[in-house]
Length: 180
Ligand code: GDP
Image (cartoon, rainbow, N blue to C red; front, side, top):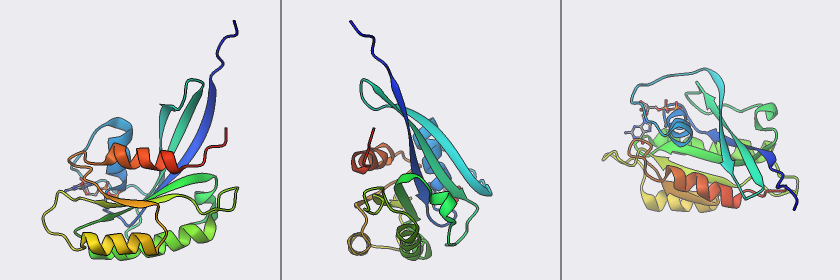
């Protein structure tokens, strides 16, 4: 009887969007199960790791790359995008500028990335801070925008209330093309 050999794979997912929309909080919630109210502006690129049991034989080391310290959209270098297999674009529902920036973030992504099979990276759009009552963007608007810009889907999230964080990452995992 052969012993089961575990295989480990690396999976790089990008977390992009304007500053202050909740990217670091999202990663922190997903990876560490925590939320902290304090605003911490990190500079550069952070990456966090989470190990997932993908199947009986496969472990995935999930790398979440969070661009930090970018107040507004800036074009990223190809090095940052290299090797990524999926992407999460986040905006703040109470901040319409951060919503408008999503178009630029998505365009930059599509310009600089492509899966080995020639397809664009699966990318999910997250309308974060949906716990806030003052909405700057309507669901109808987000829905149209999401379709027009080639997102696989969009979801409302509240990292604060732990709403749809696991679900969003779960969705991305099902969309990611895994070639083990
Ligand atoms: P980043 O610059 O995109 O990484 O944003 P941060 O993760 O640093 O979050 C910016 C601020 O928004 C912090 O004060 C967070 O506590 C707050 N924040 C993040 N997610 C939520 C949320 O779902 N609801 C509310 N009300 N605040 C949030």
